[in-house]
Figure 1 (cartoon, one colour):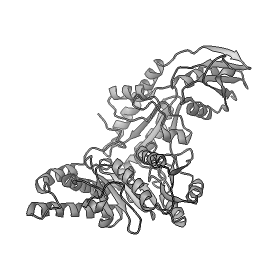
Figure 2 (cartoon, helix red, strand yellow; figure 1 turned 60 degrees about the horizontal axis):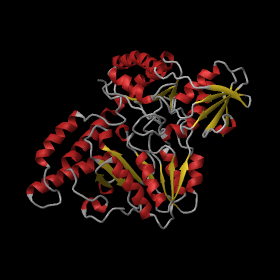
Figure 3 (cartoon, rainbow, N blue to C red; figure 1 turned 60 degrees about the vertical axis):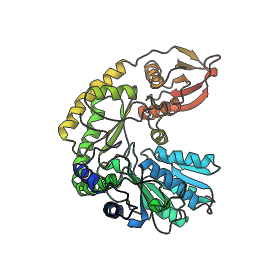
Figure 4 (cartoon, one colour; figure 1 turned 120 degrees about the vertical axis):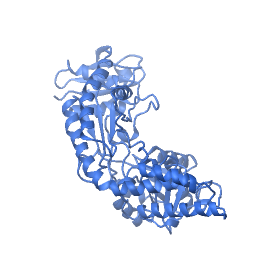
Length: 469
């Protein structure tokens, strides 16, 4: 099965696998001890640390290994806030950060801190003016900005944000999980985290780099290992394999970048031509490495349940991902797509493995249209309609996405030019998807009203749409 979901995790690089097996024999001992096997393990650990540090552009003594990228993000956010508590109790982050960063921010807020979320544009790139304004707020102790977005591939202006943070005397933390395999994160950032399984290393190895001079205090109990930042026994064989994988990924990056950008461009051109009612998300500058990752493309299909579409593509032999608001694992909309003002339903993220071929992409393009058509055919309920307050009323109360947008589209078939449709819904996702549908279809979103104004006794919201074309 072609793996088109490497943004979630990358198969272990062959060289990393070899290094892991060798290190299991040579690096099994406790590197903190003094006997021969322990000294050998320590040499392997130090060598791996120096290798990873060089690839990240930091000093070896600025780098710690963690149990995961998620742990590295948590330690970074909470540790930097603790270390800079004298500055104040205010945290700034973009609206599209990884959930692990958002969860750390929620923890900080629950403990009495203040959090400002900087908005993004329709491509998912942070608005620097708003970011700068938030940085200048009194008491700002930390700012967070990912290097590249994990859902749509947009590269963030980290170097510019770092300059703004420096002017405000605020440390900048960068979650670099999605970009580290492709090159260094430029700019005078203060701390950086990443995860080995995103670049072809083994799972269970994260990295946290905190530059010298940056105030940091671990939120965990004191421990003598890893400079006191990360307690516990490090997995030397896995760390060795992670270092080998990162070096290999960097050596292959230029060739893979050029080849995968061409395949993503093919997807970008062909998907909307083959599948009706599709919106491609993220920055359209496919050839600019400063604006988007080379291997990732996300598109939203109108009138499709994302989980059902994933299943259909899986049966067709393709592993892809979705941040759909309709997935049973979350039942909440993608915060990234919501922040972008994009349609949250039926979205598919294609992230190509470095071994992906043009023939695999062509095969995917062949199976996608019938998969979408089949899912749409099974999601065609007809909602009750009536008229009130001069509007066609579509009652989808009690039904979840993508039904509200499906019924809205159906209602438009009989709406005169200038006519109004009131979509009655109690699904919170409708607040995102109805305006996004209007934007995609060039119709006018007129705002909301209580559902009871259009249906007596109804509890929910009326989303008002006026036909322009």
